[in-house]
Length: 257
Image (cartoon, rainbow, N blue to C red):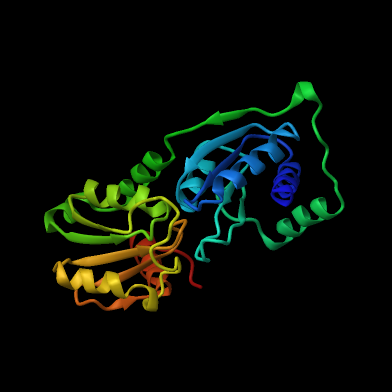
């Protein structure tokens, strides 16, 4: 906890001014991490907005929406349940660039942290609309009418991570019939969190046995997604990145890379 508190304070010192958002996945160690992060930030006078348990991309979108100076996502991502970490987010919703990360480490190592006096400590505010904001943003960029017309049956395997709080809701809003698998956001991971083919055999079997049209699987903080076809074929997460890029470029041409 001491390391978490000091690194959070170093990140706040790096940002200097403006509110900082804090969110987490569902790991059982997150309450300890969250209190440590909040302590570090308010100790240097930062204003903190606690968005609670949510996917890391949800926090990233909320940083941008609220014009915050940055954010901290508490998550071990695709790693086992006993792991945990801090993901530092810039004001534009992206993760720190390498040189920025080095600066935070320098502040930490050289103890360049200025603590606030008792009458200038930071304050903590609760914000409960992060997931709804994310849902709204997604619905703006997809063809809701077309998806509804297909009346899809979808299996969601959230691995008991943060994706359980958003992916079933999104599919329901799109008119899909949802079969939930490992969608209890309790941090007791029913399978290894990384959504790779060897961890998704149960999802594959359920997609086939329920005659679903498609299956989706997340890691603990839902910044990764793997897809299972109606035939049970598992498409790893690197495929989904290409699909997302193709979808985005299909809506608006970008630069040649």
